[in-house]
Image (cartoon, rainbow, N blue to C red):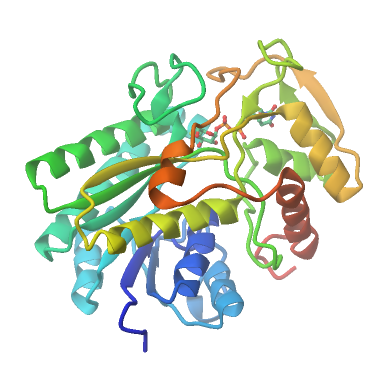
Length: 355
Ligand code: UFG
């Protein structure tokens, strides 16, 4: 039984990389957690429950309620809401591969946009209006100067359907808030999370060919791929390679927990808020490779290739507002991010699969 200050928190996409780390933080803050996930990326463990969720329970020593639900299915969502008295929704479930979104735009709009409309609709039916939404730095598009601050215009020059789906969803949520002031919505713009839980039990093991930098760098260090492709060394950056803001995934998860605390502290009347969750500084691809080599004591073989279409040279956050209003900042060092990432992969050479 939870304490009197605890909330019943629904985490959508809670079996995923950010979602599972988020569930740990929310449980550790003393709340009850219900997870829904359609398992499209998850490895199923005992009892048909995703292995990542078993590990969330193992880390925290607490239980969660889990339902395999697709957010596109509004009746299934209604069913979950009818079973519990949910206080807050943390909505992470989404499709997130930029390249894939160009090939499957309809799926991305369906899951990311319509899925969120469904959640807001069912929340409204239950008169429960506290939502934390996982947005992305991608909404800042390609034209803004760095660092990205929340007051910058969004939606301009976004190239991928993934990015547009996040922008359209943000726009829809803002419209809902302006029509009905009793909503509390916190939109969190994530930068590029890396690392893994320090226990070595949770991390990211993408199904299929990994797309992101550190997922590929680890595979190169392990010798599973011959080399990492470095996409461009002719950007206007100190060493010519792309620069990004890479917060530790546990820092990011603690940022989500800080947003939850904000809704509670403001007595459920914080209205609409938007925060960047990033470290506030960028590292180049070559700096990230060097950091992983140090943490793993392995070489990361790499080859310079031409620029990847759609990439920009540099982006990183201005996280000042999150510090001012949420009391949150990313504190874990680059060394720690790489050490935890390596730890997860050495403990789980096949991800969440048993062998
Ligand atoms: N990179 C490589 N080789 C790779 C993969 C990436 O050199 O194999 C480089 C990219 O060119 C870029 C940097 O590493 O300079 C980071 O690339 P990622 O693919 O890891 O991440 P992106 O910044 O392209 O995109 C990420 C997420 C998106 C999100 C975006 C903005 O994948 O979901 O950040 O938040 F939208």
